[in-house]
Length: 323
Image 1 (cartoon, helix red, strand yellow):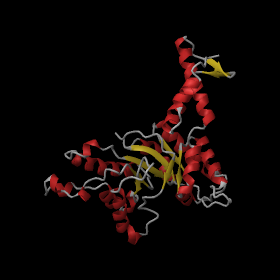
Image 2 (cartoon, helix red, strand yellow):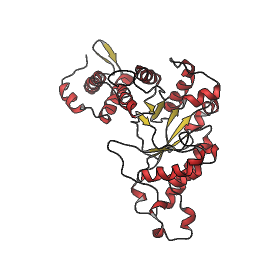
Image 3 (tube, helix red, strand yellow):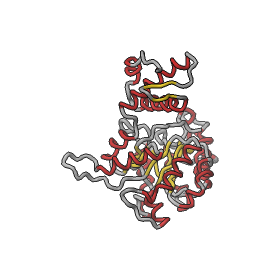
Image 4 (cartoon, helix red, strand yellow):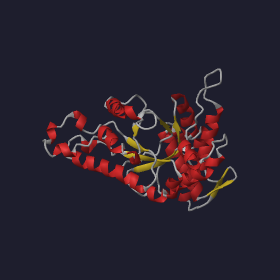
């Protein structure tokens, strides 16, 4: 099973083989992406993902052949040690993003290709030490919404759902409006289905407005509004189409300092309450019970992953008592 990476706040499109590549450039794009993947990861990048073409397009196998590297047929004719570097899986590929996932069979196809490749590479000394590849599925149609339960259960490699608003609007003949109410049902379904399936990542729609109109060059206000709206619906990340969007998305989809301080206080006091046999207690005049305490622990864990100095806060509030 793929390792569960729950901290996907900003998904920046860079390695793309689908919509950003015209049909006659697909083969060239595959080679360029593979070449880029074989280079060391840029500083600060935790995960490198490639968006392939959809399974329905007939191009997905060729994409996976290049970026994941299938060599099972070659292995029938050559000893394993004679395979070239290009015929081996890139150790820098973390995730495959699959667009237009309409049914579980789309993910099953990708899963089978990847697991077959990995099973062949188990004979390799390098393959056994690399993390498993993760899958992220793009939800883009009414059909995919009706099949969400099956999609979420289709493969243990799946780690999250991504809402593709523009293609969804095309499928349903919707017009995108600033308040995004036309997408409320779809977004709620996606966030709920991902949570029900215990998928760590729910990644919200793209903010298509990215050019700044402010003198300081800061991102437009609509980006922050969309991020906060997505977070309120249960999303824990957002797609980005420009690097300038990343800092805002990272900040809003991470815990803020007041929230982290509250969570640390709750966890410290809750441990003391539990030791005293108290299942419910109060903090700042508000009741704290098991669900609230568990939420606080989740916030602390996320804060640690986001780089907060949680130990310093624990020391500051070590004397916090349950009221």
